[in-house]
Amino acid sequence: MSTEAELGYQDALRQVLRTLHRRLKVLQEERKEAPPERQAEYAHRIAEVEHLLDIVASLHR
Image 1 (cartoon, one colour):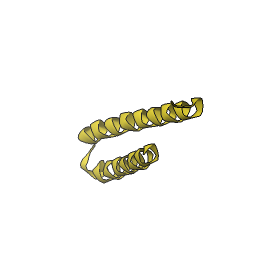
Image 2 (spheres, helix red, strand yellow):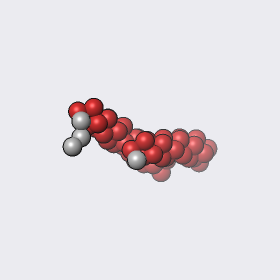
Image 3 (cartoon, one colour):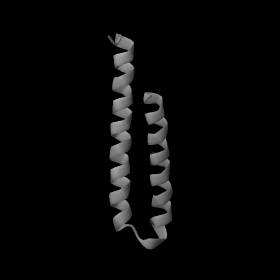
């Protein structure tokens, strides 16, 4: 059985993951409409969010 602290930790991780996934989706949508000169900037931001998702996922294990 999970303790209250473990449940809180799992809930916090879910909230962070949900927020990062929403941010990733927004960046991907904005990138589709961005001018060519800003594509690299969006690619960099998307890569950063994906990296953060990897980090948070590793905390979950």
